[in-house]
Image 1 (cartoon, rainbow, N blue to C red):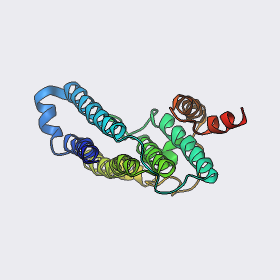
Image 2 (cartoon, rainbow, N blue to C red; image 1 turned 90 degrees about the vertical axis):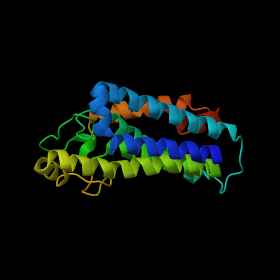
Image 3 (cartoon, rainbow, N blue to C red; image 1 turned 45 degrees about the vertical axis):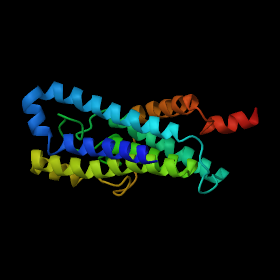
Length: 217
């Protein structure tokens, strides 16, 4: 658990350090492409360290049972998270170098941080159904990074974009659906559904629809 905790601190800490206090200095030294490559490499290595430590811990006793109702709720939330993730890849001003559109559309009308919320929801679902101490630590790190990172993105975009960012945030919500229900769009709905089905099918454990299809078989 100590190794997992250290890997989680490294994963979260390097993200924040490279995204904020160290970003300008690193970009000036290695350029924007070099910075993005280094950022991605460090992120992958620290995340891989988390996965290694998680697996090395082996099986643990869940802190609570995952009833069928919880599995159903988890599947629905994961499907929604997949839709947010698919939709976040199109016209998202929170991505590096992107600009805010005049009005939010698709998943951006649901939340201005669809990608980060997809990670946050995934972490919540995974922690809820696995319910082991190592899962709570692993998923807690991802949840904290996703939500705190969203706050950091808002702060940085506010400084960089000024009035344009204020206009954008006036039309969007931080928490999904806080400004009402919105249509995610066909691309997000279809792409997210296909990603959800593929990701859950490839999962080492029977999850989401495959859990019940396997039981029926």
